[in-house]
Image 1 (cartoon, protein in one colour):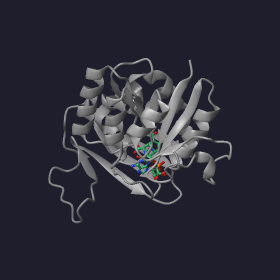
Image 2: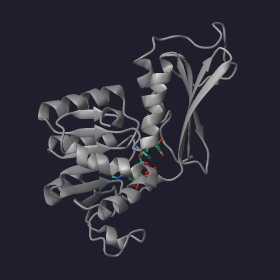
Image 3: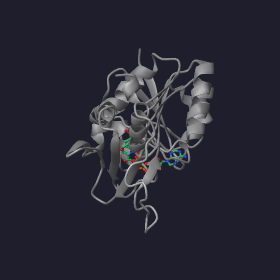
Image 4: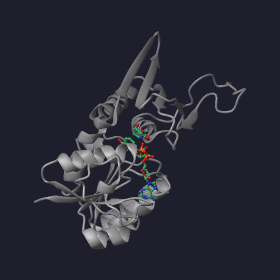
Length: 265
Ligand SMILES: NC(=O)C1=CN([C@@H]2O[C@H](COP(=O)(O)OP(=O)(O)OC[C@H]3O[C@@H](n4cnc5c(N)ncnc54)[C@H](O)[C@@H]3O)[C@@H](O)[C@H]2O)C=CC1
Ligand SMILES: O=C(O)C1=N[C@H](C(=O)O)C[C@H](O)C1
């Protein structure tokens, strides 16, 4: 069976890489792209894509679904649009594979309920790179023994959300195995607001944004006279594509919402 795939955000850094990956993958067909402009055009008409890519562009997701009947919607857009796209897809029995980060807890819970009630598979993956998933798994394990943790995530300077979805997910996984604790000196004071980074259940997350970076993270564990550093680097966006394709296949086999690829591998 061929999986019919639509991509929201196809012109973006991740979306354009996903277009290449899906069109090359046996057993998948790219049937539509969702954008906020270029309605009525096809990807072939955009300079960045091959002139043979006759994939229609829509600006309305419901219309896209009615006209092209995708099985899966890959969303690689932005934190403002992703919730609505995921909800509309689920309401139309289209399985979302979401890489976009920046969901609130409330939005995640609503989508989880919607997916469960309608028995439509949905994967929300803050990071598709296998190395990043392992970094998070190893960090969760290390935190059982070394509970003093600081997370430093480093990204390109076009990123809209902070902390990164990966940084937040790492903190959430660690919080599952360690009880909340205040780190640093009990009387410490910030002389400049934010100096100690964002706080999540007593852990600090530091967000670095610089041109030249892609996606990187270090999880630092301090103990008596020792430091354990777990680091992952994505040097390009191809690093995410194995995970994207894996999710497109996996989402066809589930009937609920899975948040994080570590739950599937
Ligand atoms: N889960 C993962 O492994 C990864 C996730 N990301 C996330 O993916 C998202 C996209 O990242 P980039 O590709 O770097 O961003 P980008 O800014 O290069 O691309 C976003 C694309 O979405 C389009 N877009 C914006 N609003 C839209 C709407 N309402 N409907 C349809 N398209 C719309 C934009 O035109 C743009 O082409 C971000 O949230 C980022 O954090 C990025 C890399 C890896
Ligand atoms: O915006 C990005 O680039 C990335 N976003 C994801 C995140 O917020 O964790 C995944 C990866 O780090 C790249």
